[in-house]
Length: 149
Image (cartoon, helix red, strand yellow):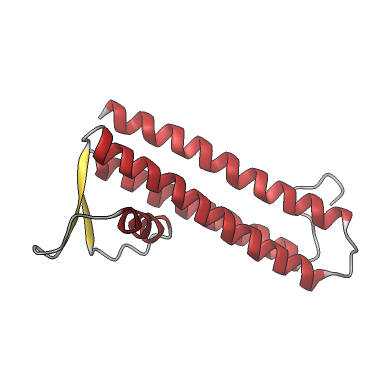
């Protein structure tokens, strides 16, 4: 369990840094760009946030693969009994579904992997909420993390 807690803490810290740096760069680009370019600012914001979330889910994917295949902290089992063992793409799919808190249920974690899964869902919810708040501020013409706004 200590290993699952440690993995979760490291991944949360790394993904939070990725998320903050992405939002900070977008905010700085908005602050230094023309004030009347709201459409471009919103498009840039949506694109950057989407890429950041996919990268963050990918970081969790690597953590899941390492936890299962390297540390044997649990397993990611398909709900169908005759399904093949999960591939890397299955882990990535599971991570994306979990990160967005969709929770489809076609892949089921067990063991201490369930702890990492819960932390990912909570962290995904926090970052998606922060992204929505950031996007609303951009839509209002602000550069949310810039000292100029």
